[in-house]
Image (cartoon, rainbow, N blue to C red; front, side, top):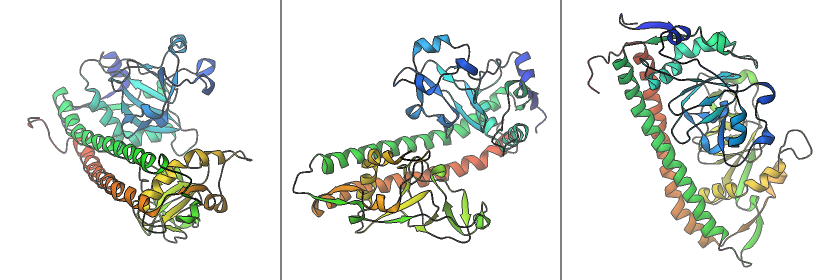
Length: 397
């Protein structure tokens, strides 16, 4: 650490009037329940809504403004730094200006900076390996009860360089994150456009001359089988392995495990589908991979993989019927998946759709590859910037 960088505790920063008291959401009876959720209102943010350093407002719950007024705390505002501290710990985000106020669950703390701290620097400091390890150790991570309450958070260390260096460090890292976010938004828009084309070309034009069929008429389905646990590793040895939907991203799953004894395989660009609750979640295999019992791969029989993918997106409502059907945990077997009813267009219609949409899917893949590259650059720069190994004091940004 450079000589002009200083380490503080959260409590010291509060006393120095550089940071407001960090707060989480409402506990006990006052905590909003699922029955309180509405389609529009004040965003109610949980730990799983912090994704990739951003708040995912597209998939969050909402409560009414009237109910929000009855709550005592948990009111985060644009610019606040969020940190998850219970169960799923260590996720971070900065609240955007999409909403004037959001409500937090007790899983999430907000940090509101005052004078002398750059909020984006603080967010990236929270992302650093050193801080994440401290948080993990203090919270007892690895247990289902991992938790670090507000009182304990007051003791957390925060290293601060001079303010102008904080700003420069944050700008370097943010430039990479902004490009990652742009690519993510492009991919979301492209996927939405592609599905709109599916609706226009396939669904809206269907008539009684189109053949009724089942999913196995257009695709080969492979149900996953999990290798033995002692063949798993996180060191990249063997074949990439996905057990279930836990690794699913927006489009492609994130590598975490490999296995030295793969059983059932999916090929690159195959559609991956969750076959256990929640049934019907969809991703695409970025590469050849082993799939566990929580997944199925769906491979086009005649090289119309984009058509198969968007057919699966279109089947999600029917697939969700299997969630919780007859048991506490929903599932679907191979016979039920093979016999999912579909309407099969003439081959010329499928060819037309594929010619238009397959290039769009290729752009999504290329953008994802760039996202991975930029993420690797950011993650390699982050510890070097946060330790002062890369000196930004004389850089003009």
